[in-house]
Image (cartoon, rainbow, N blue to C red):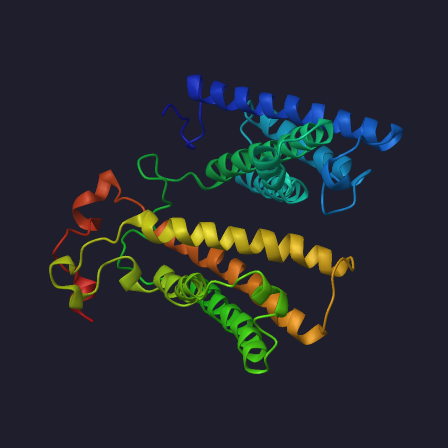
Length: 348
């Protein structure tokens, strides 16, 4: 990678960064203009009557305009030697705008599923283009935010770590915030299961409708078993050492690295799904009065799912950092060799 003395990209790499940024600017400018037209002249007909769970009109225009501003500033900064503080500010601005656009376009996967399994007319195609372009614009902003952060912290070109601040080995302790996230996830799971247990004991579950539809007890047992693993073992594996290195009682596997994506992939998938479906869509629908019920059970159910999902995402962020491949520049001292224990492990 060609870089200046501060680690900032130059030459061909810097040109590709600017090229991507210009593409993102054009994409977001088109998104802003289309939604500005819809806000002034009226929106077309969408699938299920709406583009998003959130209010339309000027809301997507403002979000996309902020995203456009952030991307344009990043493109301008690529030609200048800006300070680390400015790059941090641009990273935060683009990250916030990207998350907002992705959240606003949350219905994109729902539209895709509807199109694949039910087909669709003009309203489905319009929804697909509107939500898809918003989700893509959000991802572009997040990519630019990640690049701006790299310019600010100047990580190692070989492994992406900030040596001295980032974890170097799998056997290091997870940070405290990761433990907080993991145990919040466990608490959210227990809150949700508490509601289900109460409904079961009081005879409210399974409902008459479930019985009439032919409830499969085998499928239910499998589902509850997987749900319990995702609410207890998964969050704990994301932060405890045995989730990164096989524990001693597994014999031949002792000390060997746990396949990274076996844990991280499931954590990200479950965490993102719960956060998006219950934390964003569900909470928004509840606040807007689209469904109701007794307040406390609903709070425990919706809040439990939300904490569970957010906690998994927080713990997954720590697991991602701890399970990076060893830095090639320091491989001898940081590599965790299969079948061997590190000095930290031997001291425990």
